[in-house]
Image (cartoon, rainbow, N blue to C red; front, side):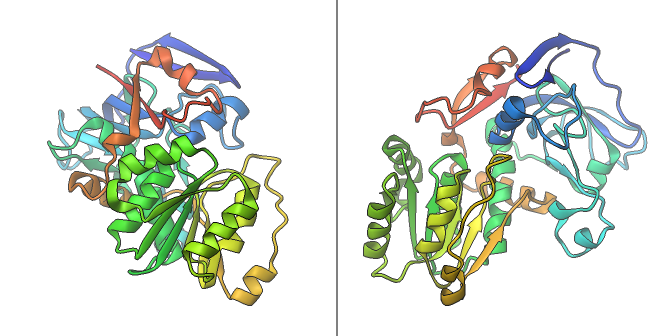
Length: 352
């Protein structure tokens, strides 16, 4: 089989190796799709503290079961179409018992601790099966859509932690794939108004097409003073009940506190690059508004299952986010930082 192995920062090799053996309590999945995540881009270009090289990256996964371990109880069968969750939690630590598996003390993940989806066949250890991390797909859901479910699951976790309520006004800053998912998710949850902001007008144009009538409006945020003036105008000077920051920019975190309403919530959903995460914040904005500031990391197997159902039922358009279908040979190009192409949202590696 072929696989793409990250051997060093900015050095990936396409190799031919034997298929992995099937764990006695696990599975082997024949990969069909693996979406390229912004985290993969960061790892390829800058490394990651949890990553020991060489490693096969990729954690937005979908495929068909190729083989089933002899200890599996019959709940999985060869040929079943499945999505595999990125995270593998222990199920017994304090965080897992508090229903926060993404905060598991012993959290592991595909593409970090285990070889991920940028290979033709992937071994799934028994612990990933036992924690509920393998979800069977309906026949109507494409593999490309299923590979987007991981990102939507993280968005579901973020809006749960922010305590989104029906009728609230929402501002999403960052019109990339996750920002578009957040906007669609907020509308499906009954948000009263959903606004999307970005510094690139072309990204807002594309977001409007995908979200159709789900957006109340869009705001350009490249000029901070003009942007804040527009926020005051469209909210009647009140601000937004929910502000979701879906970009890795310190300036956006600073602006977010000025956009939120009294008693509202700001979610630092997008992490900042290593060495650039010390941000000066006007904490009086938090103090006098009595607003909350939360962060979000990862998702749970249950949220992944919820995401798959939402996509299947047409509540969220995941298909339109897939703008590039590539092979393993084109993976390194998709992992380059920036890219400068506002029309590219999600690249998906397809295995035929």
